[in-house]
Image (tube, rainbow, N blue to C red; front, top):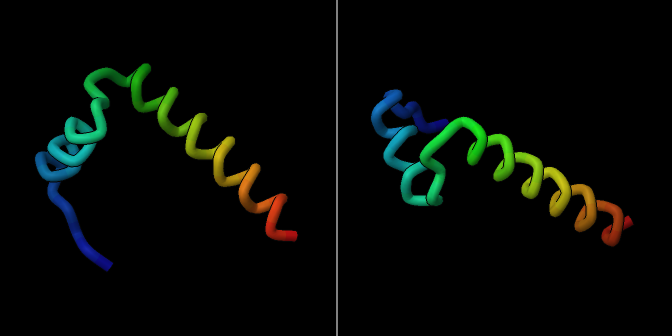
Length: 43
């Protein structure tokens, strides 16, 4: 497991285009939807 400092985490989020908390929430929702959809197809 890799440990990241809070600055490194913010840098990685910025690379994904996440600037605001609302962006993070939207990203997590989309990721969860994608994961759920892919997981269902594998069953």
